[in-house]
Length: 218
Image (cartoon, rainbow, N blue to C red; front, side, top):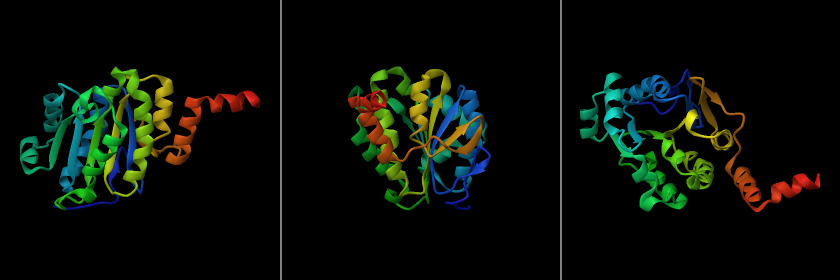
């Protein structure tokens, strides 16, 4: 079986050094059409698959993978496929804890595995965040912070957002935290991306009102 850590294809383009992707879709059908071939290719390249799916969506997700020709039972038994519940992953005790999530993803990173797989392809369904506005501020900050982690690993991390479930302001901030974006079914360098240090400062200024004060002064 071939192994590959560079030149990974996603949505009509090859991934380079950036591997943190915001994927914007209009519903599940749109998402599976684009992500299905990418997921199948991962198994063919002996990459680990870690999928975070919504509560109650596990069996439906496995069925969709089988439609792509993926032997989900065998890959799960071998440990190459893990399907986790997003609520359990992101909202332990009912709250989103940024520091805990950084630790969680650090543990998932390829540099912390037993070396059986050269990298992981991690796909995260982000619908859980649309159900509680209280999580969004911390999530956006986390999405920016985690770029420092993924810059040290070859893993591919795709955060899947349904455009129908998030407001325009939220989507704009989400875009600013991902160096790559899939939109219209095509992978692109994200012109709206802002590096973590700069973006996190802007968030702090926004929350303390400094940004508004600067605008008023001008």
